[in-house]
Image (cartoon, rainbow, N blue to C red; front, side, top):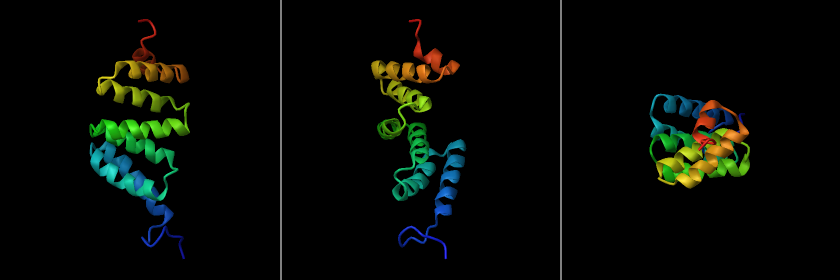
Length: 126
């Protein structure tokens, strides 16, 4: 008999399916639908950093900037060397009108990964 999580009858595979479906919803520009699926995944597996990063991206895409900021922060607490999370948090701060915090994270992202987009945003030459 498959292992289930609580009395929901959900298997570990069900959460993987939810995660993959959330990725597809985000790609299809349905960030709110993605968040709903990811809420279930994270409720069952709060340690899942990939799900938290995807939910942060979905919050950002839905212009829910405070939840995006909080979720990107959780990701960075667990993975301080995640250049993408620094970059995305910087974009979140930028959209919130917080340029000092944004530039700090743009520069951290660029220092961790010399991705041309990160380097441009970091404005080291300014």
